[in-house]
Length: 304
Image 1 (cartoon, rainbow, N blue to C red):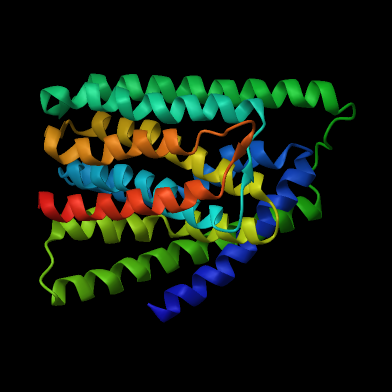
Image 2: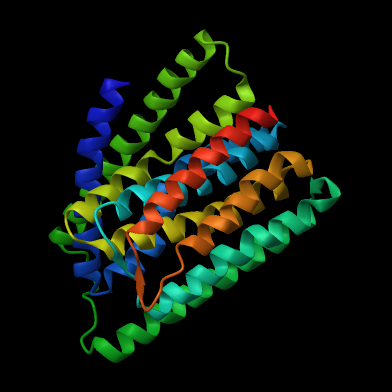
């Protein structure tokens, strides 16, 4: 566990530097890079867990991990970031992503109402993910058309290579840290006699969210709030659309209402709590989100 924390600290620093350098080299807003590249990268642990679980014929593990991670991202990670003070959220892109963050869990709950997420349901979620990526791409094209007159060099510069290497090394450290954290915490939970469901809904979700946790808190500490918020919103949408959609497309998921409703309802409630007021998310919301997360944990244990 201590090794995992040390790796997370080093990896988070390297990854954050890589993201910031990449946005500067590409001459794109940090928010856009965080919502896309950073978010997709930090969601890779959830994608790996979910895909492997689906291929093994147990997609419910992947579903629980993806939905649980979304609750952790907002109710715990973003809440901790808010304890530093209010966070500005004035970009138009924020409004689009907040809307998706509210609609996606509601849609997933409706799709799971019959007790299953079918391959057709997975295809629908993947179609929405494609729409969201298309909107991101359009935003990128418009920004570069309006703000950037000179084109990027065709050849990849040494700076670009070092930036990419820095981000990859940092992300690798974060993945390893998350894996070690899950192994250590799972061992402790097993020794205490805690069931595998609770371990998956809490420990595994927290472990696979470690990249988002470290990246967001470091970004907040360094004054790059747009990177933290963009990473969390993008990660949640990647989890809810790409990961759940891919998992269901590989293997239909048996999803009883009792199993998925807690995480999905709390996911919607958390998204509503972080809606900005006059372009700002106030610090007080952080305490509210932590209280919501505590209730989520209690209900998860009670449900089991």
